[in-house]
Length: 288
Image (cartoon, rainbow, N blue to C red):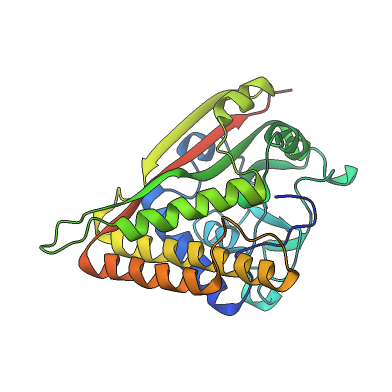
């Protein structure tokens, strides 16, 4: 995302609800909140930070399933998604902090684990390595990083098992438009973070890849949630381009977004679904 770009998914209450649903669906597909190889290394008083934490839901849910001696810190460039302080556990603290900018020195080397999840919209071309290097300043020697992203470039619709299911063509079309828009507007690219981790000197690098439809019974919910994200982003961008008078060739209008969202929803009603790969990369800083 270019400097100064807004968060295109928005922070309205409807989007906050969708983000909560997305968190639970992705966690179900992945199968864990903290990768087992990391969980086994955390000390009894682990300090864990979530970068680009949004609503803080990963921190809140992880704190519920972790020892009470763990403490959690969430950093985000805006506090607009933060819930009221009385809605989060006492060992979870949310604060302003842009993971693409240098962190204050008093935070350097303070955390046993970093979590980053679904920040691809905040990334552009040739920024992954620099951003990772900045993040790693927060880790203690031997500390762990866990980074989760979806490979939406290869995402497409599929015909379901129900009699009368469509081919999912509208689902595929919406995904293709999203990827095209992301590439043109944000220089969207999908990284090889395993290589980036190793180039930055991380040890014990692993890449865990699962399919978004791994848990068959939530295929429909996963697809509907994804449609909400895609339609929301495309609609927000269409509205902005329309009001700013920017070049709109190659971008959908708000009417086109609404039309294709309706078609995609009919695909889902017929039993069709979306599928993409979910990648979780982990690595550890060298021990002291």
